Length: 166
Length: 202
Image 1 (cartoon, rainbow over the protein chains, first blue to last red):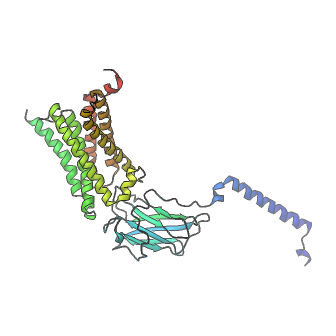
Image 2 (cartoon, rainbow over the protein chains, first blue to last red; image 1 turned 90 degrees about the vertical axis):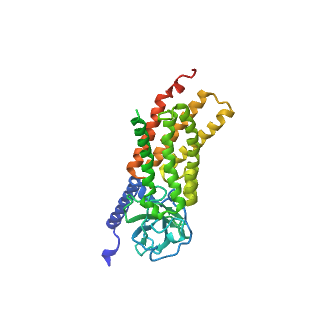
Image 3 (spheres, rainbow over the protein chains, first blue to last red; image 1 turned 30 degrees about the horizontal axis):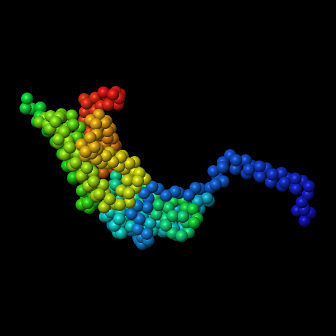
């Protein structure tokens, strides 16, 4: 196969292409430095861990349901969705205070890193209608979130986790 | 004129009773235990007492001219301390970490800090009133300190209450808060408190 053998022309062509690619990559790295660091991990929110009871059981639904807590879990850096991650959820609802064990439950993320747990309607407590979520297992660093509902009439609330490997 | 006192007392009673009644019949109470309900109502009652204080200090209420008014003012002050303690203690029992966050100024809710500032101003004001006789604090110094604390209490409590999504109705809460600010401003103007700051030597 004579035409497969590298000639001076092909060496020059591939060499210049590689140099151009290297230059472009380097330049884009300078122009968009954030891309080099990747997706930043979610920091814990103030008050996020309040009334946390570690080890909430994985449940199909907390209490009678009627309200949806949804969200996603991704890995810091590359943003890859994380499947089978346990997210613990609790709130002051129509069925109990935050400190009540029956107000707590956990769920696992699906193959796309999404989670969704039905729970009783969240009602305002301590001045704001809010929920609590926790990632607290070994593979990643612990994160506590405390999202606030934009309106007290909302029947769902979502929270996004970006986890940093432990 | 008998109509004027009736109107003043009637309006004042309405300004206090309506917010309390709205809070006491809030739908949110269905999902709260008695301690939490009591803590919330103690807060509403404290706000009502904060409205009474400048009116008593200024001697604006019929039948309570300045000298008698101020004797009642002292008693209401003591009651206010009790109401604030009941408010904070009840919330502490309901959710200790939330109250600890508030007291340490690390709460996620902005209204907490204003409430805690107003609380310390209430306690400082009461302590100063007790020490005033014992330590023979000079009238001018006393007035300067007490009026400053009173302004902090009124403003801090109003911001605290307005930012909360709680049992008080929006309209009655706003009305009560505006009355607190108006009454505090009026007594400050009438007693010419700025003179305490501007003229160092009387």
